[in-house]
Amino acid sequence: MEISKGFKGQEEEIIDLLAATFAASEGVEEGALIRDLTRDLLATTADADIQVYTAREKRSLIGAIIFSRLTYDQDERAVFVLGPVGVATERQGRGIGQGLLAHGLAGLRKSGVDVAVTYGDPNYYSRVGFRPITEELARAPFRLKHPKGWLGQSLTDRELEPLTGPSRCVEAFNRPDYW
Image 1: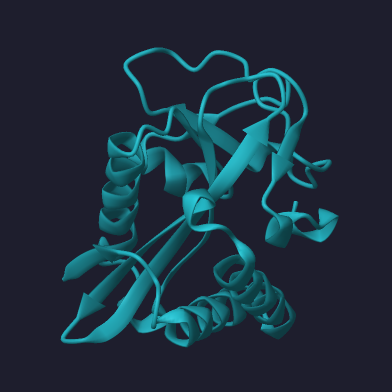
Image 2 (image 1 turned 90 degrees about the vertical axis):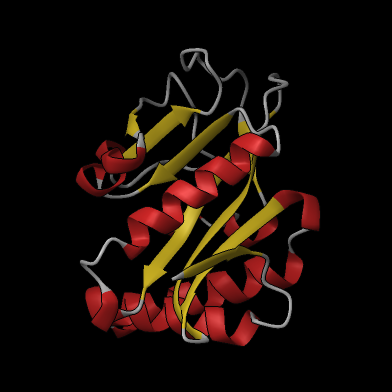
């Protein structure tokens, strides 16, 4: 498996993979929602505000993860939110997602990001260091439908301390139905 950073020239492949992954696990409607989100993230997010990591095997795209900036108005720390994340349905359960996530988090650390957050299954994401957090620790841009899925981790050698101020996500994520 080859993991790389970047997405230019791979946009449609990434969009199709993530949409198909979510459609297979969550239904056609969720797949369409993720298709729209991924297309918007890749097309409208400034380069400084997005990091995309892909996994390939024999030139075939088998996994993709996207991190985008989350800004806290009264906090200087660099924060990125993870999502969406997907591994080709027929390749799941083989450690591809975990490897991709570990590589992506290491890339964030190297680029000076202080905190990573995500909104998902605590059992899955805890394998790469995410822990449940409260909105007192890190306020989400919108009211969370499933607060138990709000997860975070410090990417520095310090404990995760509360992020101050309201948060703003990139424009593509700026819809309450994603939260």
